[in-house]
Amino acid sequence: MFSKERTPAAAAIRARYTVSLAPPVFILGAPRSGTTLLRLMLDRHPLISVPDETEFFHFVYGRRWGFGRLEDVRNRARLVDAYLATERIRRLNLDVPELRRTLMAEATSYPSFLLTLLRFCAASRGKQIAGEKTASHAVQVARLLEWFPGCRIIHLVRDPRDTAASMMQMPWTPRSALASARTWRRSNESVLACSGSEQYLRLRYEDLVAAPEDQLRRVCAHLGVDYCGAMLRQDDSGAGVRWWSQRAHKPVTRSRVQTWRSGLDPWQASLVEEVAGPLMQELGYARECAAASFVVLSRGVVEFWREVAIHKALRLPAMAQRLLRPCQIAAQEMWQDRADRTYAKLRHRSLGSVAAGGGDGEPAEVVRRFGV
Image (cartoon, rainbow, N blue to C red; front, side, top):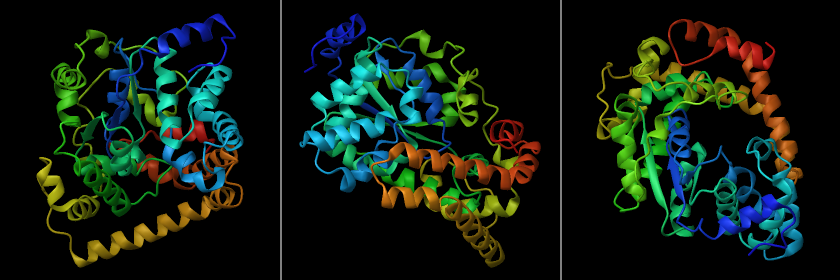
């Protein structure tokens, strides 16, 4: 399973790897739904490992046409070296040489690449259950269930208006109420498709922050482990994380519930409710705004196309990198980061005005981190 031991640390990982054989657990939901908060809670459990986002489907599986079949050791080596050179791998603080040897030995297919990565993360910390949380993976739930038949799905939902208010402050997505609402609906519809399975568990963000211990006990029962009080114990691990994730490292609070009342304009809230439609009511969120008028819909469409055009134009170098040089993952990651920085600079004034009204943004951090 492992190549020859090179260091005491590698030997320890090898000894623990064989116990990290429980089916993986995936935290899924729309972006800005509290999935990072839940990830951190589960990751504090002594048996559960949920590392930072892998973006596997974007950076790895989405480039399978460039890397080819992983049964070929040369293709596998190119993919392993390209992915391990990314910033997101650096943030995981792993033994990269040993991870490379493990992937070269185990990752003979794309599903085994993901599973080996997650199990290595768990084994390196002496944990038995490997987990993953990447918001964009919500739309890949069917494939995850196909690849890992025994996996567990934890679906976290949040009020679409709060989700939209938060998403509109992020540099990595268009600042559009319509775009945010569509992302919320698509993500949750995808995960709900497996809601009839015993592998599926749904939580509401509002319940998680109101009664975190009760909700975490539900999760632990779903995963077949005992609840541990350490899951609610705060630490200082927020140092150095990206600014949009820092709030999840702070004490659990209900202060981010119903932030849409100050974070969205009335017409934006009406538009989000229109797009979310019956799904938001099915998930327990009542509509409160008047039906979106033609003027509101038109305004939303204009905002959508303007912001999408700007966002995609800034990401053209990253898209060109992916198309022309699909095997250079770190380079595309760098170009995406540059595009996000530029978008933040273009939108910093509106970010400040929204957050001043109580939204979910962090304008001071935008200015400091992105050099606005």
